[in-house]
Length: 442
Image (cartoon, rainbow, N blue to C red; front, side, top):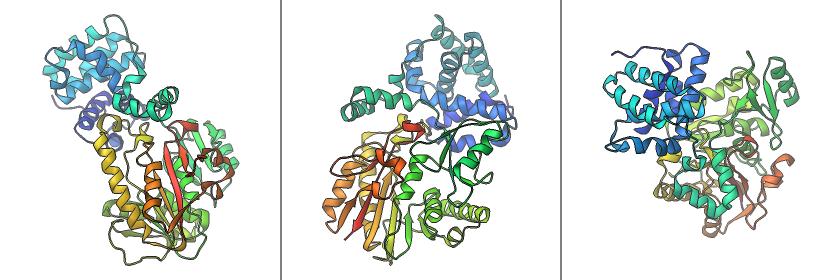
């Protein structure tokens, strides 16, 4: 049967199946917008896909005993249907009969009619005693939970797991060159939004509930940047103290570079090795520069470059920012599939790649200049251990206390250990998990 356009459950099945095969949910969700013109359908699709991915581990535990022949042997589309059907009953308060019938209908629309009887039978068995209570601790693989329990303690680890099940809030960073935060807050409230002020970031607002005309869907809509508050705090660490350009390596999508240019009224050289991402970043800078008449943003350059390659600009930068590729465990609310894909080998691969990039980034920094390192990971290998290893390899750099550069509101987020770092955990005041350090070349 040919798939019907504009069917949110059918779209959800297709996305979930493709995610299991390696695609990313946020990209697929963005790509189907045109097929779902109704805003309610788009919201339902986003909620259904992301909630199914967040609760997938616990959903599988309930469904697996009812599948003869092995749950893992099923087609990805069929596994997606079983998870999605159970999720609707267990987490979305849909009556069992409706959860089953709507899922079976979506499977037919998706062209997988032969699997409908199996999905119908398995879901009815799983829901025979009513909607099951899902165990939040089963949503994170056991090996990751054990790591977090060893590092943070049992209670804190459980808190992190629960935070990873919550949708990430829509956060805006009010542009420092525009109206102040209270003005923007009042405007959004007048339009019917429920807005919360961030206690850790002087420019951040969290949109808890959108009004009919108020929800910021992009940076074209108002005097703000769309970015997580923890990510935006990293930009404060780029404050220049010596002459020389600000350089952002691995800069895409460009939020930190744009905010740094606005904060310090100083152009940034934003380098990114992926040409397509570099082009999108340049377009973002141009759009923001036009909106706020920022000469610093207008003069900000983009460069297609590999951060680990020889640059020919050694010892010229006043500040270098390296927001390095990482495991992403601090962003599981936004990228829920990370929990199902990550391996210990991948964490070690990220650590080694970050080490190479840090060594290369250090060559850009002029004497007296700064190197800022950040990752959206809460794994110790990518954070504190990586920072300590860099200092051991580079005696010409010293660690600086982030509180010297951060706004007063964020000082409590700096660890008090021998190596002071900006550290946030998922869900902490609505923020993602981040680690950031600032080194100075002596």
